[in-house]
Length: 397
Image (cartoon, rainbow, N blue to C red; front, side):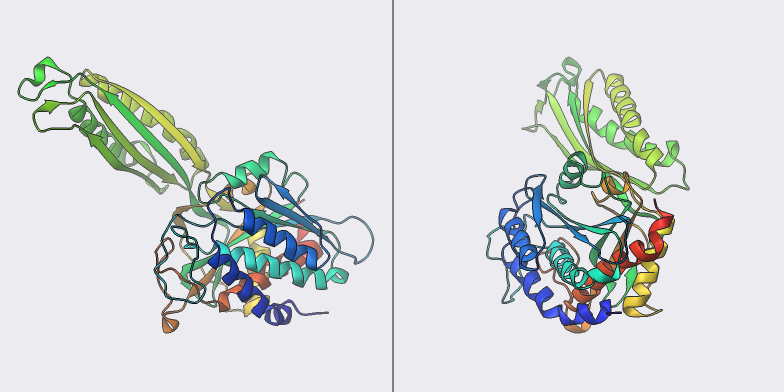
């Protein structure tokens, strides 16, 4: 039997070259036109038929030729979009698009999934079933996965696997344990309306700053007093704007912030609790308040059996010490919308290498990755698919 690890090594330079090409040509969310076209071209070169989905997304299937029967179908997902960030790295493959940068690793995800496609295409005789490749747009604005789900991207699959090249984990390590891995991400906007007047005569108006300040304080009691201390959650007010001059009582206040949690139940509750607290707080100061609540992502929760397949795949790629435990993160992932539809596992593939000077966090203008992590990512994609289809898929039908 051909070896996934040796094929990942064989195609490593291809992986690096594709990653660097994508890095040089970053594109904004849901506008990844060049990236989409290049992915389709690369898949076509190895005889695979790809098509667009969700605007600039790409889907493609690789059918195994081993044995008879239809078999299972497993999806592998990579995201494609870049950040609105000016790159500060002095590298030969620095971003050529002003104000845009692959500052989160999505270039590596797309390149590694393309490389996994080459590996799996070489191994078609060694598996029964189908591997569905999903190149997803718009992860950074939490729009792409939702759109792909709506258009049926995972309607016909038995499970899905995704990964994130991760600078909070050293290169050569993989984390894919079961349970909550990334938080839900929601945005709230609060508009408080008062009544303007002279700052020296506040009794003639209705002070929206006072109402807003009270709302900020009262919102902090939600996590501390209404939610279980056994369930991690965050509520942060990050913008508070009001007023124009030191002696003018303003008409309005504007507040904006985020909530994060790992519980599906708390994620459902947050909006109604915030609405009640804000409304009643504003009214106690004779003001009124409106809440706009945007649900961006769900909690990303790994299925236990899918994680088991992922951990065993990690050992095959890197050895028994490669699979490590990593704390869940309050960052969000719209992979969660796929995971809400079918059994899923999401892995973190370490990419920090301080000896190479690679340690900047995600979304930093000097973010970069240890490119040795690319062969690990490509191998993990391919090994997971093979193990799911040949051994583990019956657990997840």
